[in-house]
Amino acid sequence: MNIERLKEIREDRDYKQIDIAKLLKITQAQYSRYEMGINTIPLDKINKLADFYNTSIDYLLSKTDEKKPYPKSILKKK
Image 1 (tube, rainbow, N blue to C red):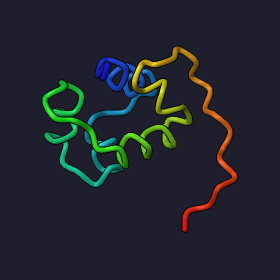
Image 2: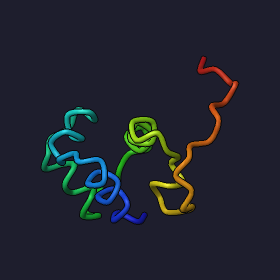
Image 3: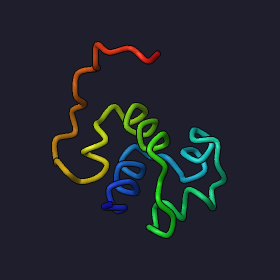
Image 4: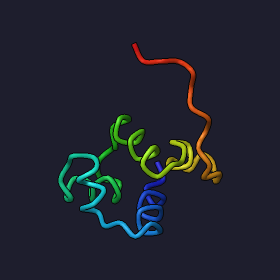
């Protein structure tokens, strides 16, 4: 995973690590380890970040350079 993009998008929007850590309900130290690539980010947290930043998971994972999010799925969670 391209960890640089997480830091880049956070800094571009003038957030501190502690702000994102609070959003994800984790410690700042734990979030810092995600950005440094020490720990793998759980899928639910990547999904939450994509929604928060209004982008796609693919953008966060550097699979695309397109920041625009995909249209929401019509499938509902059961």
